[in-house]
Image (cartoon, rainbow, N blue to C red):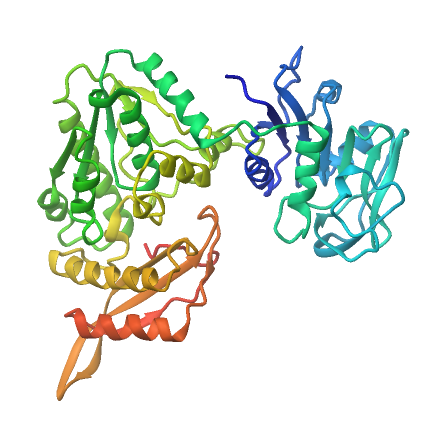
Length: 511
């Protein structure tokens, strides 16, 4: 089925993915494309609208990215946001002025007469909070356009006389723009006429058909980690091909408490093989304290273990992976692919000489959509809403040497943190919450005895994609419960601290 689609041309804005997510929240499919792409000779029938994103460049500068003006000839409604509005103005013969200072942060917009359909949910009396992020500004709109809104005397919105082409100086996609989501809805639904046919149920139906067509009568191997992405991939493949799916879970001894048992129970119908490789991993990690060396060892051992097990499965030329849409976007971004791979998150990449054809059924989805599909497929709530967990597991939270004894101590402390977060009803609201074990001993007193044991650190952060993170202000009462339980129930820990650093400058994980 060909879905109604909105195309977003990405000029490098940090908010481009937010635009896409706001549109997807309306059950409307959208794609992000580099602004440097050439316009198609003919636009597809399912295309209902085009959005030009913001970006860091100036339309007046030499660093302005190349742009094919043919995109403006689609005949579909068009919305330019920030840089996108300035580009529409510049190409249309209007005037863009150089900003003497950058305007970044909250502002209020006032509507002009005949503000048009996008501002139907804004207060015409003023006091409409929005988020600005620009240096240049529009002095005079192109011929055939009117000014629809202003902020501090600066043009904040323009529209064509037929209300088909629009420009906004502010960012409606961010939460700081009070009625921004409603504005995007006005554009996508009211102006573009999108009806919303992008739903989890329909996605599952289409992917089941695609998977069966790609795989035929062959088998598929899925590396199951227990995380949201790999679990939803496995569930979707099981729905499509049943016993042709073979799942491999490598128990490296670095999992959270109860992880292996929960995976065995939930995926027992999935031709599941659990490889007990704990000794293999922990023997190689003995005496190692350098974080990067730890990660390389874990990645190398994982590859070998997975390869050995995969080679035992016959008639299996396919490998399933949980590639998501942000991964696809990054690889074709106008800013270029990411220069740095986070090795502490991504380990276990398969060697090039393993000749598999990839099956990537989630490559069109954002994380929140993956969770919705997982719920529709009947995965447990705990699995669907599982917090991100690093590939090297507890090894990057067990600072210093990774021993069986220290892992047992950390695993129990981490479980207590998660139990208390869950009891407080905060699991879904927090990106990640966990415990870290430090190779630092301090003096304490328990009963009438002196102790000299290690310290644990509790970490809890808010984030949307892991690229940045803010510390969660957990209630003191909750922190007190965690500390009391850890110190009293976990042998080897006599002190608990709370990490209040953000990312940047810190990272989410400690190693």
